[in-house]
Length: 283
Image (cartoon, rainbow, N blue to C red; front, top):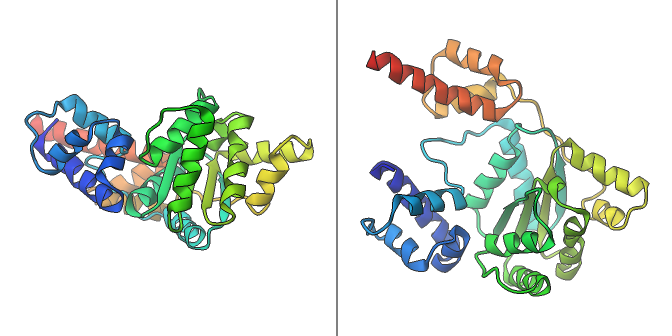
């Protein structure tokens, strides 16, 4: 890992600490408070590259990449701001690659009292609870009940918190229903954004129609509707390309044609462009 990359990580760690605390950021990153302190203060000799990479991944730090303001990013940001200010909850259901996760990650990095969790298929309820408290920067030991109480107690202390549960469709029913408990406990003092692919909306509506336990309650608490996003436009791709150093109009058009409504594909094509440029200059 280069010193320039370490500098990028250091700057992001400093910024995240300014929105939270050094101890909480250390817990989120899964490293010691001393390691975070050394990163912040430029004492890098004793920090192995493996530790830098761990912090980068755990804190979701993007190196050598600029997030551009696409239409979907702006729309989701507006919804998140309104929800957090008003303590309301909403749900998003749309296909993969249209920029949901990127918007959530950016919002969680740039704002106070934002808890962001990206769910995994293999999680059981305790795994989910541990992920939630870790996202808060809290210790993840104890029973499921103690983890739940720790999470709820922490949220109750915050001013206008918002919990973003990304890829919630990967959770099992029992874990998904935990949203109902926290929502009830906090009495509109905490906002929630529940987000998944199209299958999430279908699953909720199917559960409601079959009167499955918890589904009507979830549907009611998100306002009985789902937010949908737009397809990626050439303007979105141009914004991303320009922000990351690609300005050739023909290259931008080519990247858009290859994107297949997937921002991950756009990012890959931008990275491939620079690989080709380096190879061309080296030959």
